[in-house]
Amino acid sequence: MEIKIESSLKSQSIALITGGNKGLGQQVAKELVGQGYLVLLGSRDFENGKKASEEIGESAYPIQLDVTDAQSINSAAERITAEFGRLDLLVNNAAIAQSGNYSSVSEVLESSKASVASLDEIRTLFETNVLGVLAVTQAMLPLIRLSNSGRIINISSALGSLTLNSDVNFPYRSYFGATYSASKTALNAMTLALAIELEETGIKVRAASPSFTATAMNDFQGTDSVEVGAKALVLAALDTDSPTGSFTGPDGPLPW
Ligand SMILES: NC(=O)c1ccc[n+]([C@@H]2O[C@H](COP(=O)([O-])OP(=O)(O)OC[C@H]3O[C@@H](n4cnc5c(N)ncnc54)[C@H](OP(=O)(O)O)[C@@H]3O)[C@@H](O)[C@H]2O)c1
Image (cartoon, rainbow, N blue to C red):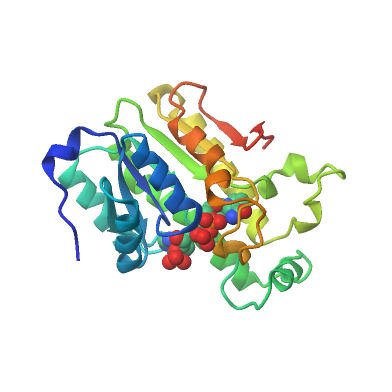
């Protein structure tokens, strides 16, 4: 089922966020709407996206989007092309921390160690967190090129920073493993590659990390609320001015 968007709303800045049906994605969507954006709230389960959009209210519209499904991505791109003809902001937020086969966060961390990590698990995580981001970005790029202020924000993590994890004093260093963290490192590489390629176009490509936020991803063990956690993401998403290729977190720039 699709929801038709009134043509009178088309003068607004248009954002697409993946995995917008809950957690940080829904919070970012809410705040973008608060900033006057029309937000296409991507959700792999349309009904979940519809419910999340209704919670946000006007200017949030659900769109079915599974970042691992080429047909779903193409349908979303076709719909945005037909109804808006451009995209101003793409927030690649959707991600998974594990395949769903674990019973606790500590089990996930233990099984992410490079010496024992399942190759299938690594493939599954990279499929969503890295290739999914690239697939959505490639499909949406023609629409972003038509914006006067095109931006692509990839939601990453300090856990993916090679520089931070090389520092013996980094408190989360023991979490650096071959699954989720490494997928965020690879996402950072894709972010920088795209930023370099698109430098001349004016399209800003950024990676941004939230603080440690209580969401389903960490079994709600994060220390911050989504309102606090999303701050750095919203700042990066709304930043039309500072140089492309940035990686920022709650306390400012992060090293790659
Ligand atoms: N929470 C933290 O402390 C933290 C820290 C650093 C970085 N991050 C990053 O922040 C972002 C948001 O995470 P979160 O904490 O808000 O987690 P979350 O509540 O688990 O939300 C993840 C979202 O991604 C969606 N998703 C997963 N696979 C998808 C797919 N194949 N296609 C489309 N959507 C998919 C989920 O949809 P379903 O509801 O259908 O599963 C959900 O909407 C992620 O990129 C995460 O890595 C979070």
